[in-house]
Length: 98
Image (cartoon, rainbow, N blue to C red; front, side):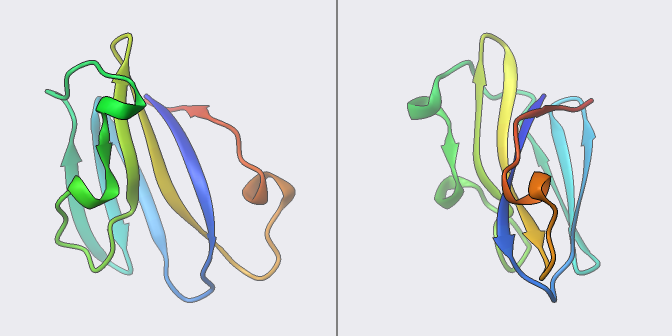
């Protein structure tokens, strides 16, 4: 899975991610939801799932976009950063997980 951690300033809320295959387990301020993209068909950005199409029990949707390209899951996730973020947090690159 390829992941892009999209920075958003938020010094109070805490987000954590766990990756298992094409599943993402998200914890926001102690509340957890699981997102299973195992059966997501191949499709480019236009054929992927956008934030408004992803259902969650969390107060906000931490997944901004999810799509498979050439069989590889690609996900853009919110990444809360505080007052003194690192350069890597402010200007992230895609990372491989799982």
